[in-house]
Length: 549
Image 1 (cartoon, one colour):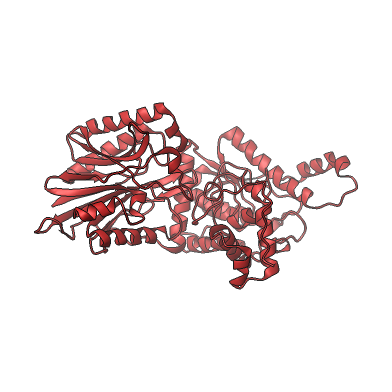
Image 2: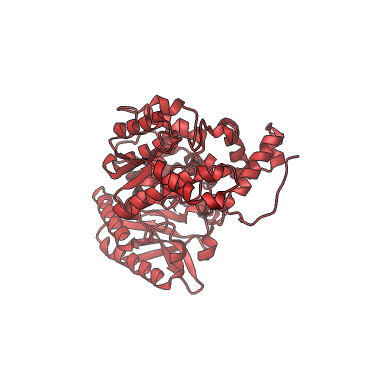
């Protein structure tokens, strides 16, 4: 029998001492539980992903010293498997190290380096060339890192030939909707191909745009989910794997702690990802509070609720900034949201400032009709006020725009796009409504009034304005955005799937034109398979157009 602990921890990129301290503490807990081995996530020493920090020789040196320090701190306890950056004669490697009795007993270099989506590992690392089997007592364990498990081939084919009974896979696998099901399928495939148990350890926490959702698991050699850790929180899962006669097959192990509940699904899954991503971004960057504009609309109401859930109501400050076109109901709704959440709110009218802007621009604007420029002045005044409050009081400004708006450019540079973080930047408008309804159904007073949900979406920058004056209904818009942005389908393919030609042509043109705006947007939590930013990289200067006609 071998007792393995899965250390699903939240590390911080660059905090080598903090990461080592946490791993030493968790290794102590695992030793107290009688574990023979604790497995920590991919690049846990450096935090994941360290990106261009890896290009600094001193950083790599410090991470290697930290690994040795962790080995010394855990010398008297169970063995430790953890991720770090290794250096060989040929270059750098994304590595896993086995620490035993105060030293590094084995090193494994990741064989498959992902270079798609949010991953740039070929920029930093060279691939390993060999499998690595380690022994704990009489038990043989294969070592692998994240992407190694996502397709057949090395090192898993080598472990299959050697009839290794269990394979350890340490991960930094970022979240998007339904990702946990993909991971489970991958583990099942590798288990059935190799006949080995798969011990899959994932990191948890927020890092810039990325959220890591945990969901560590143990999958049997028959492809059955035997044990799993929680999602969106740190967790220590300790399991027994029992070797059967013959030495190459193991029986279902015993979980040493109470079983976890079912993994969250649907809107709850997304909501918890947003809360974790926002909370960690603020905390890890040293912000004690956040500030946002609360308009009385559904997007700002959801953002305020996420912030209160992530950081506590005392850490959220809101400004209601009505203009001449803001309805009294919107101000009332903003105040009611703030009261229900228990957050601070102050009303700062922008009427006089707006009039001063228009008066100052009278000569440059002479002979033109009033239009979008005047509308956007209001949004920019609000952005300016929020940044001023941040500058004076130190809070992180949260932008409140959603993915539908960012996709088609229905947002104002240096206005509603101003801020340090945009929590719902990757959340389509239709999903905003789902999240709000789910959150309102939880215990306690529903934070978002029914009138906020039911009112037609409006920027309220001109009399009687509605989003549908400029945009198609979101129920029609969001599926086209998903097809074009997330699935990379051509306009022709989108039309062939049943969408109106003129509508597709219009939406695709809006998305393409707005690239320069999105490049200047703040980061936000990634919750879809392809988010704007590091996940989708298109040139701003780009004349390639494909009409569906």
